[in-house]
Image 1 (tube, helix red, strand yellow):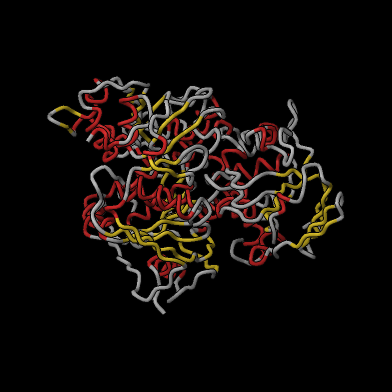
Image 2 (image 1 turned 30 degrees about the horizontal axis):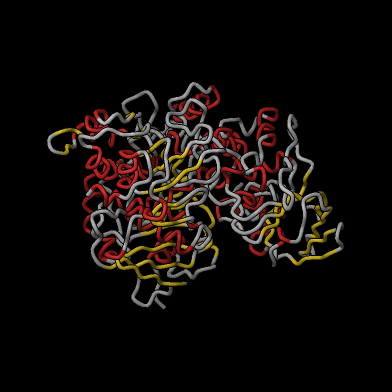
Length: 431
Length: 186
């Protein structure tokens, strides 16, 4: 019987010819990624469990990006970065990207791609649920907790249950007012926040393979919002070119077999999409922008691993160019590389950064920032009963800060259009 | 492994995400320092909307104001318990508050792994939706060998799904103990 791309990669990682969904396998891990929130407790467990003899299984395969609570005066948060810094020094971890140096990268999932750690056919585990983002590179990637990460850190191995796969095919050409965010919100509305639990979400179709690398990452990034173990897109020439520019590692391309078995298949016509939002307080509480337009807002937010990539800011800048925002609007580039690009990329000869500043947006430094609330002094954090529209990934109660706030999730086009009116606005009104 | 877990039930709704279990602003405390790590217990379930905290009545604090432990030992959830982020701080916070088991219709993957591999709280799947039939403050008891839950307040008995593949890890204590027992690590 045929296998899906996820099954093939897991079989390879388990040293087997084939695997079947439901089977528990021990995998060899190619890369372990951690950050400032989960890195310190992971290190602590690793030291406790392996004792004096604690040894990193393969230093080249460990990558550490401080990214969550970076620009804060919170002493506990700063202590966590200090723990990572000492650990990297004591154990000579080369792939550590320290805050306050020119090595600082920003949000881990985007930095993994930019720094050449995402390699087709490989297996990546990370101490962050959005580790599934890397699946856009035709690889298996998923989030784990500190104990599992500590186990990997010492052994290079971890158990996993082979997931069933769901296949989402998007045919045709996407309208100009639709982004990958609208596609994944539709999927979430259709299968809900537990429709993907213990499953792989595989995306294909000509609309998917026409997407940029950035946009593909938006899709796989939010696979976890359906509870999925991983999101995955087969690597094509676009991905290969991106990888070759950043890594000299050899890689293996995997494709799902024609007779691979899927738990369910979903077909969408790209041309029939319209702009969507997820209403408070769940990413699957999906509605059309048309049905909620006019809702008054107190803040707009464009940032995070989901919606803070260069493509997201290019989309937003087209609307913001020459216009003034009506409510406070935050621009938070996911990575320092994206932040640099904001100064280089132009619309009508004006840099994106200048466009945002002239339209009275606040351009912040790269980090996870207010996507997950964070310490009280986090830029853009939700206060009181604010009503926010955001390109981020979650709108659970209290996710962006205040427990009384309400968050709508939407595409960068919808958020930028809404920033110009101060109420939820259909991007088609500006096109 | 204890054979029975007994105590007061705290009942929650569906889709209890990890931001509700332990809000992100609290993820900065040490998890190894005994005193500081108790703050996780203090703030466990602190972002559950008040009217959904302690069903069916609601407005029941899981941890009383000014305290660091909860009087509740068993959480009864609905579907998709623990969805959202990968933070191991979530089952850890429940353990620090004094919880021994969470019984829910279904669990999110990372939360489930963290509960088991870290040896914090036993995640038990119920065969039916127990958060509709059990009330906060009911005295309940889980019989681990028999995979059943008894509500001593109403005298009703409910079947739980066997723990299956993960039972050896729970019996060993956590993933590391399991790996030592099975000779994977020294």
